[in-house]
Amino acid sequence: HLAERFAATVVPASLRPGAAACIAEHRRRGHDVVLVSASLALYLEPIASRVGDIDAILSTRLAVDDGAFTGELDGANCRGPEKASRLRSWLTDGGLDGATLWAYGDSEGDRELLAAHPDDTFDRAGYARVLSWAGRYEESIAEFRRAAVADSTNLETRLGLARVRSWAGDLPGAAIEYRRILRANPSYGDAWL
Image 1 (cartoon, rainbow, N blue to C red):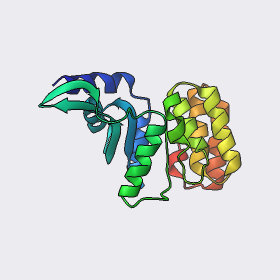
Image 2 (image 1 turned 90 degrees about the vertical axis):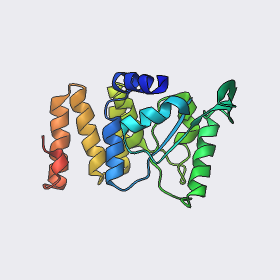
Image 3 (image 1 turned 180 degrees about the vertical axis):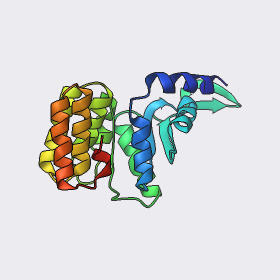
Image 4 (image 1 turned 45 degrees about the vertical axis):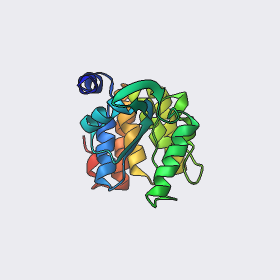
């Protein structure tokens, strides 16, 4: 199947570093994981099965008539406002209105989705992670710092800042962040190198 072969090629070559680990961490915490994308469901489904345990895929679908693609879309393109609309519908249908959301995105088409948080706040640490996956370390560090100022007790934000500083080659800065984490909680195992 062509979509399966495409997924086998795309996942190893273009998946953002840390994306699978991020999905696994959300799973470990008992979160639902939903993939919302303008990409075609035809190949997102096999990609999602390779990435991790995904609860739902909300994406652009191709119209099919009598077993053949028509060349048209089945519904709207899942981009921009459509992403937020589909996620809201999925949450409502699942009885999850008001749920805490963690959203990640890397394009202009994700803006409305990223703004879909119930309290209209932006998940700075989540955005910082996305920036780091794109190799935009300085921007990522700045966002992690803003997130750390907003919630100085959040050790996971500090850990993210430490990791990105190390990836950016700032080992002394990373060591400072790791020490801050261990001073706040000496048993915080994720901070041990």
